[in-house]
Image 1 (tube, chains in turn red, blue, brown, purple):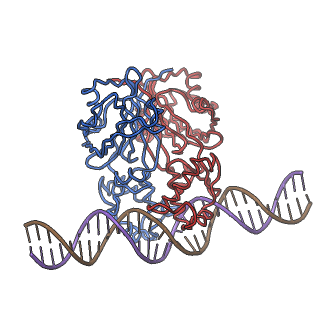
Image 2 (cartoon, chains in turn purple, green, orange, yellow):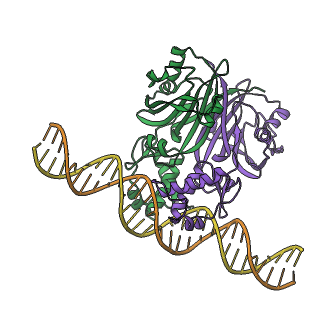
Image 3 (cartoon, helix red, strand yellow):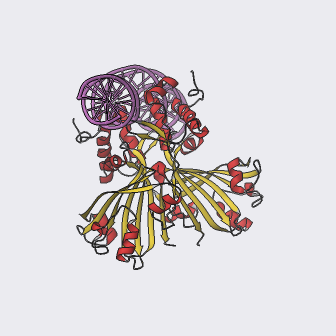
Length: 244
Length: 244
DNA sequence: TCACAAATCTGGTATAGTCCAGTTAAGCGA
DNA sequence: TCGCTTAACTGGACTATACCAGATTTGTGA
């Protein structure tokens, strides 16, 4: 009854959402700024903490804010634009947009192909595959974790390489592989378990799963990649000429 | 302490999530089936209702289940695959996948161009534009609402046409327009207000916003379309040859 | 048999706490 | 001034209720 967070007819949490969204849009809360704590918002709005959190979840779902566990809620930086029809690696297209990309290798190992993997690689279940786990950040903020599977036949010594840069560059330069076709699939998902931990987000945070397969001229699969993105870090853009 | 919904070390709601996800995967809960009510799950799992809902929200975020307001939670049907590089309209690609598409016109009117609209159409703010609001469903379940803006110069009598089918067909057949380029942008969003109401979902449900602009050979904008999708109804797939 | 009214069930919203485990900042001693 | 300990703070998880309004079902009367 005392501030902007009531007014409207709808639920309280939506009114608080609108209020905060307005402050972000007007710049009263700048990019990267920390919002007042949940308990402060609670006092300010007169709502219960659960209601305040409801409003914050909403803003999070829209990509306007994000949380840092036990630290606070922050205004999200703008997303990077990802164009699946362009064959540029993460390091390239993030830098192109004036942001600072970094890559960190979390692990590299040989794993046995699961049933799903085997179907993709056209091999038997249990066949050894190289698995590369990486975490990538933009301006120091982790935005995705990925697992890339590569057939050892294609790159026998891959695990000995430095893989904190562009994997594609390694495959092309060291092994002479040429990717000519890309198959990209996207769907919303929830970030849970290892993925959530690696990104420093709460389990259950919404995300975007990008599954990418690249093939060479002989239609041999080169990379099979699962990327788990923070949903607010990416915007997909496709520009195409009509083919009919 | 009495059923599968405890066990693990993590939070209770994740354990319950895993339990339900398992039942869906195994087919114990079939597509379209209704889950037990929140209060029943509460009794079955021993958790508080808020905790049960937390698990349900998680599954919803992953696209496994959806809710019908004040009716219950249901297992989601499989998503349709949307390929932005193919120039096929909704009616076409949904039918292609063996599903039944329907379109319903919610309204058609002339509106004044907003600042954003004017930038896209290259016209002055306030210039009249045709706005078409539609709701589209798959197998009877509403999956998206859209607003399409069209320049009256291109299709002067558009508002008199029947628009429950393919708008593109009308523009092509009646006005001789030929789309040669498409610009598609996607980002996760929250479905709120009118959109949420039109889709019959709770305000705040996660969704996917698809913004589409189509141009003709003269690079004149033909359609400017905002599609608000239920996030679990769509999967984006892009297949491209490398161009570098 | 059919139409309508009432009781019941369902999710939606909201309150008011509790306890926990990391983060962060304050304070103090060397 | 620097480094460490400690206290305060923050979000995460959870419980236990309560009331509402729309959806659904049940029951009843015509």
